[in-house]
Length: 121
Image 1: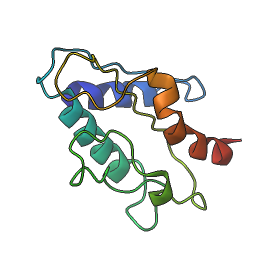
Image 2: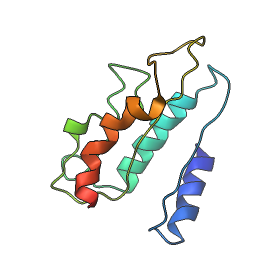
Image 3: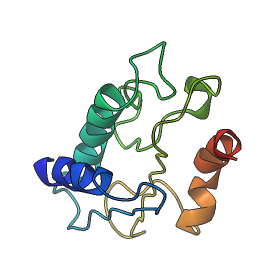
């Protein structure tokens, strides 16, 4: 978690117009999803206003689904400025545990990205 926070702070020191990508890679069961959820929570609480005043919800709502890596698009407030773009993509191994999607990862998660592109343009 500290490495992700440090990477975020480092990125913010430079040109924010350049897209940045972070990849968490590791064996199944090491906690990548949990770290992603914690990072989102930290990011939404420290770099966006708290609900209901911010663009992003304060957490991913993973109480219903512990594998959730994106907030529900309906929970975001398009009337508020978007301080960062969040798009989680889960690359699953069909033979591994916690597999919830089949097909291409980009097309599977595109519905989580599209609602946020309109506020950017």
